[in-house]
Length: 116
Length: 116
Image (cartoon, each protein chain N blue to C red):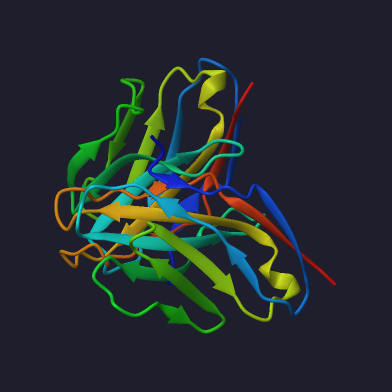
C-alpha cells in the first residue's frame, strides 16, 4: 500500500483564489510527522509546513495551512490567496516514528498552475 | 547563501562511465541525506549520514552506488558503470538532529543526470 497518496496529478486555480491540495497517509505508528514541500521547475525542494501527529492545532505558516484530520489520515495543504509564483509541484511527505527511521516518504505530487 | 549546495547541477554521461556528485550541507547540520527523483515521481530515499557515519542505505542503492561523508561535512555520491536507468535528479538534504519527527530536511537544488 502507498504510504502517501496524492490523488490530484494537476490543478488549475485562478489567481487570488484559495486552493486545497489533498494528501492521505498510511502508517501504524502513533508518532509521525507530515511535511509539505514545493518544487519549482528549477528542481529545488522548498520546505513549506510541518504537522506533528500529536499536535492538536493545525499548522499555519503565512499563506499556508495544513488541514490535519487524524482519524481520516489526511493532511491537506491549503494555500490562501494564490499567487502566480505558487505555480509548482507540491509534495506531501511523512516521517514515521521518533527514532531510527530518518527517511522521508513522498507522494507522487500535484502540479499546481495559477492562472492570471 | 547558507543553504544546501550541490555540484554539478547537470551531468550528461555515456553508459558505462563513472560519475561523482558533491553535496555541501547547511554548515551546522549533522545529518545528510541522498534521494533520487525520476520523472513524474516524488523523491525516493537512498541513504543518510549522521556526521561521518552512514547509518542507513535503501535497497535502491545497488553496489554500483557509493556514498561518503569523510569528515562529516560535504558528501559525495558516486555511480559506477552508469546505466540509462540511472537517469534522474539526485537530491541532497541536510538536517539538525532533534531526536523527534519534527526534524526538517532542507534540500539542495539537485543534480540532474542524463545517461546516454
